[in-house]
Amino acid sequence: MSKTKKSTIEVKGTAVTVLSQASDDYISLTDIAKHKEPDRSDHVIQNWMRNRNTIEFLGVWERLNNADFKPLEFEGMNAELIHMALPQGERLKRLNEIAIRQMQVLTGATAIKQIKG
Image 1: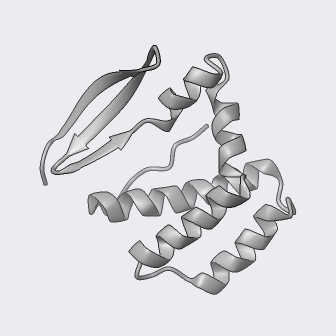
Image 2: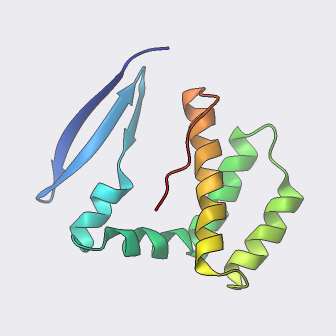
């Protein structure tokens, strides 16, 4: 596996971390969110993660990139998330699980630890 290189770029006065591995680059959403709310970037990301368009995008991404994706399970979760039937902590936990699976597919990793917030 190739080595990961960490660098930063400046975007509209905000330093944004970029991780490069092989021919792929990953940007830090947290750093981008800090541009809008420097002290509470977590709120920006939480709002983005419960946005209907974001959830639909994650579903499309999973269908295209995850051979083990279960569309019926996702549709049930999607309905719960959109209708706010789950507490915020549970919504974020489930979305974090999806993000972890996506990073595993992108990096070819078998074990990416869940980020505790």
